[in-house]
Image (cartoon, rainbow, N blue to C red; front, side):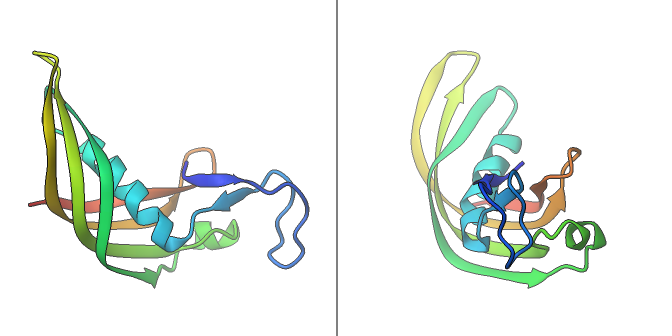
Length: 128
């Protein structure tokens, strides 16, 4: 689940009720997606995480996802590239490797998780 928080009171303009999730803006979702992708695509025996994410290019296009539209969540597919500083821990030797700046390309989209909350799904990720 990728949300900023929850609405505290009724917001008639967007139809939000108290307790409804507050989504991240499209630009705020890119660093979250990159950080998730680095953890997911880490080599076996390594723990990896992003220290900083610098976005060079970023675009998003509307999806025609009825489940997201029904729940009033944003429905976009995203493409971004830039630089990321990656730290690694080798689990077998418990050794930290120095941070490495790498270029990234990522594609992801908005989805609804198993609890019906907004989330993201990474469809493509490359580090150079």
